[in-house]
Length: 289
Ligand SMILES: O=C(O)CCC(=O)C(=O)O
Ligand SMILES: [Fe+2]
Image (cartoon, rainbow, N blue to C red):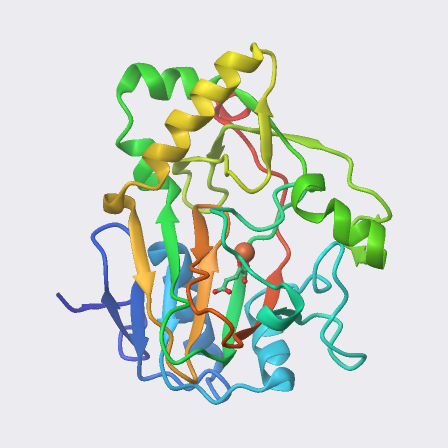
């Protein structure tokens, strides 16, 4: 199936790779794209949730420039400084420095305003392995039974970055993020069902990386509900998997997806560079209706 993106239609070719989310975008050179093409990419990002651009020629400077054309960039990460002095916006995941994303997560949900999305570039790849998968949290919400959707709509969850990042923060210190210096991580609450600010679609907004518990229920209830939600989010029907090639760039909507980078390449080195688009405070159905 080949679909073309929303108007103007002749600027890029968008080929869906899954029934709900994920698309390969052809005919675009991200480092040189004109403004109309960038606008079409931005529209395709919301529509398809994760986009793959093969054979790009981005470097750190042009990756940052591209990010600024698609939105507002955050600093690298709340507790990890940029890759170098010249690129405080680039978050490097380097296997040689314990940079792995091998837990299902949505990026940085442990702050009040989690990122809108990210642009990830493969810098160095193992010969095989290190694929990244994305789960569609909107498709997952939509395929829950009506009574469970109604229950989820009423819930709030606590997101806490300490388990994943507390040690790093204690050892290496924090960073600046959009709402100040991060010297410690204070847990935040977000609705369990998030209403997408652009489309109005609902998604299941909890993730094993950062959600510590559901607020206002017993510990056993929280555990049972989260386990059921995670099992549902990560069903094969809700996932697309990307096998990286040199030059690939992936872009995802962090408001409607989770991702997981397979750690299956032994001692080979894998380096990825990410820039991150500033997001807004998640809103639940209770606030909307
Ligand atoms: O290494 C990857 O493929 C993804 C890592 C990750 O979680 C991220 O870039 O946010
Ligand atoms: Fe991530």
